[in-house]
Length: 374
Ligand SMILES: NC(=O)c1ccc[n+]([C@@H]2O[C@H](COP(=O)([O-])OP(=O)(O)OC[C@H]3O[C@@H](n4cnc5c(N)ncnc54)[C@H](O)[C@@H]3O)[C@@H](O)[C@H]2O)c1
Ligand SMILES: [Zn+2]
Image 1: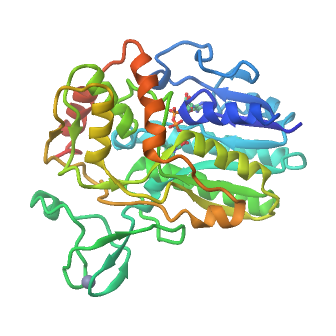
Image 2 (image 1 turned 45 degrees about the vertical axis):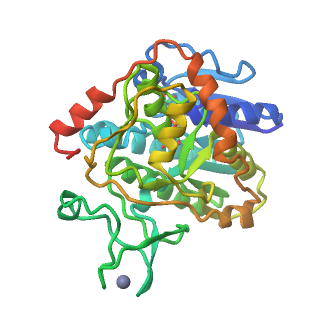
Image 3 (image 1 turned 90 degrees about the vertical axis):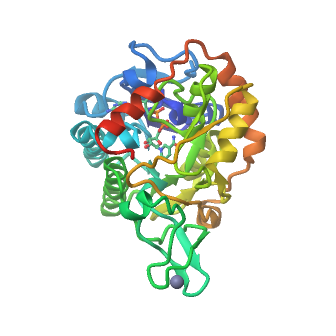
């Protein structure tokens, strides 16, 4: 039976990975420090945590602790990180020290236990792409930079070709697109990815870095105003407030169900290859923010129409959706759950959540006061 360390395994994505690994017969050990912003405080595993997995309350930057676990596992799945893109812009030290620090300590321990570790898997993010790929009607394929503040101030939301000025059409983003990190968070994900790939290559440990797109599903921290669109929207609606939409709501993202993410991780553990991979994990389909917000709001019985603010977040991208083919070709993974099929489970779960706080106004205020939302 395979023994796997899952860092951040009490979190949203990690806990689903834990469930699937346990179900597949793995012995799972989790290290998680239960970040209060995500878990609301306390030192015991959340209620949903799989009792067949071993839970260790602790920090991945605690080398002694990590060593004690590394000496009894065969594989590492690294999900632990602080995940607030906006927050990372004004908590630079906290994000870098936590996310890069956790990856560094973990990999130092891997190096010291390299004889027994046969697979490394880590969570990276689509946020490292910056803007996705586009097609210019006149110039063909392009991979543009993010929009200038002047363009955004003029409320010209769509991407424009740097050569001819035409409005660009979004195209699937593959792993070879140049990365353009637009937030401290993205930089930490890119660093983690590279640290894993370099250690994996140097010590001949097969390694997979997954660039998750926008993950949704039950157990998303609803009261954390820095998490994903579905969680933030749900917390607004459950507090009888209108959902907040930036720009005009026609920007698109690629939503992938958390159970598909778990399946991707299992596929990586089973993959027999020997190299180091970077793989997108997305649905391959672009959905507009407005249609997603409307679907969540309707599903939760929201009475207030979304507030389309016309504000924008500095560094925000317009469109990015995955080209999911490489993961299918190399590790045989393909996302299966369509958004329409996965949404009801998220909604049913959200309705049952008690005491969901809506901290969006506070969060927005903080970002505005720092000039990060305009
Ligand atoms: N949710 C998404 O849409 C998304 C998209 C792309 C990438 N990711 C990545 O997926 C991973 C999981 O994200 P999530 O959405 O489940 O977030 P989450 O906040 O629910 O889970 C992260 C977990 O890591 C723990 N943690 C953080 N720092 C730690 C440390 N130093 N030591 C021990 N535990 C620590 C937290 O307590 C939390 O339980 C992250 O690496 C994130 O960057 C998420
Ligand atoms: Zn052009």
